[in-house]
Image 1 (tube, helix red, strand yellow):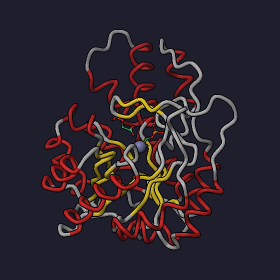
Image 2 (image 1 turned 135 degrees about the vertical axis):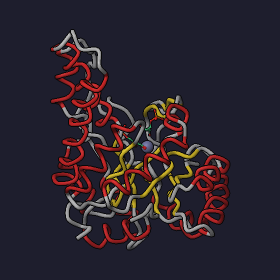
Image 3 (image 1 turned 30 degrees about the vertical axis):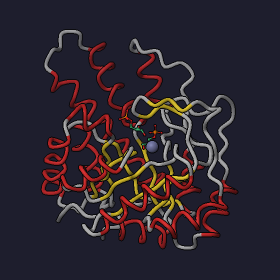
Length: 310
Ligand code: G3H
Ligand code: 13P
Ligand code: ZN
């Protein structure tokens, strides 16, 4: 068993009409929870690391923990850089042993996005590392960059063939109405499935990625709010929309906020119920169990990736 790139995972998901969960990792408990759930359900899975996660946990620790998880869970895993901002961070992660990277040039001009994505692809492909690019911009907060709703824009399907052909990218993240964080929709949730359809018509068989795909599970929001939190009008992507996307060309679904909510719910609930506790292992065990159940639920009921390793 090993860290592997995402080529086969995404191709199999496309053919099978399901999606691979790409879960953000920030510490040991989260890595254990994700990989134990995936192993138990025989599901392929992607562990992804943001620049913020690299800064918080240090890249070397996350890489070593991912290596440990491969041994412990006894399944292949992909280790992916989430939202790589430039060539240098992609190169650093590839040199550190990541098996997949995202170069996020979505804020650049079309031409500059093509140029940097192509450069990353050339470096990555020589080293058997897969590359995700992005066209269109999601709203929300990622790594201190707050993209306002006015600056966010949907992917233009007319650009996708040129982008993929000129860059050689292996998968493409598109903007169809999701956003990062726990506050995704003011009113009714709405995704532009027509854009997804048009993109996949233009790129037959090509894996599409959906960012900002947490459902903001109400059960965890409620636990947090009942135990001293204040999450206001948190709202995510309904699970039936994610299932629909997974049955279409979406082969990778990114989930971070739901993990944060499940983890925080465990800590808040335990702290409140057991004020005498000061052993971190007590509340982190509850948090880890929450994340394990959350990931198992996503794999079985949203992504449809269970038993695809059999
Ligand atoms: O896309 C954003 C992810 O949720 C990562 O968030 O940059 O705060 O680690 P972060
Ligand atoms: P969420 O904030 O919806 O979990 O999105 C995470 C993401 O897209 C990471 O790249
Ligand atoms: Zn994202």
